[in-house]
Image 1 (cartoon, rainbow, N blue to C red):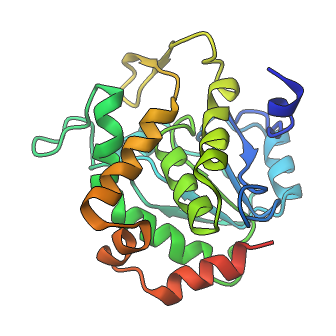
Image 2 (image 1 turned 90 degrees about the horizontal axis):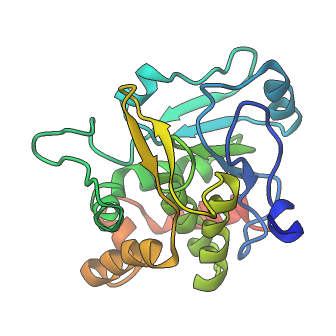
Image 3 (image 1 turned 180 degrees about the vertical axis):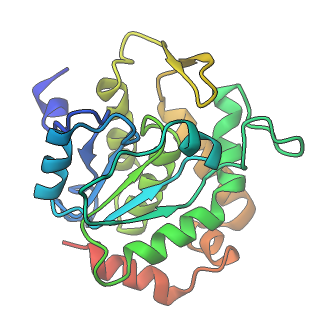
Length: 235
């Protein structure tokens, strides 16, 4: 891991892939963080989160995941919002989660609209900050959510993608997939992220809605919601 990539991460014992999402576009540092889940958070990790002024946790996981691996948040003075990016469970009979990573990203764009709008509204509200967005390991669902926020705050595609790709270093995926246990205890492979994956989510959004704001408007966001987000998070 290079010094430049390493400097993006914050050591929170028991939490994987924790880093500041700021410094990308107009998003200021120290107000929005991203990570994996808090299910293994240690007491020392909780103290470090307190020192960051954590006020809001946005959990993008399914209810099933949260049930198997609940966040350890005892002693933290914060509000948790459960805003699942994907359908209720992995084997949903109508909309099962794609096993193929290349299919997952357009699928996320198709299912994440309500979650994204709710996250944007919360991040634009007074008293929210600082906040952390997390899923299981903080690379796919979190990657898309943070990329949307950074894009709304004027970040270039290149800068958004560079930040997204840091998850490979944060999760030890620079040399390829690694095994992990899913929410049912089954072993699966965690695969590296790649620029074309995130691009496919945004392509789905633009192909069907013309722009990111139009996509969010289609799911109930207003111009006032987007303006409040920019005002609350901008440097």
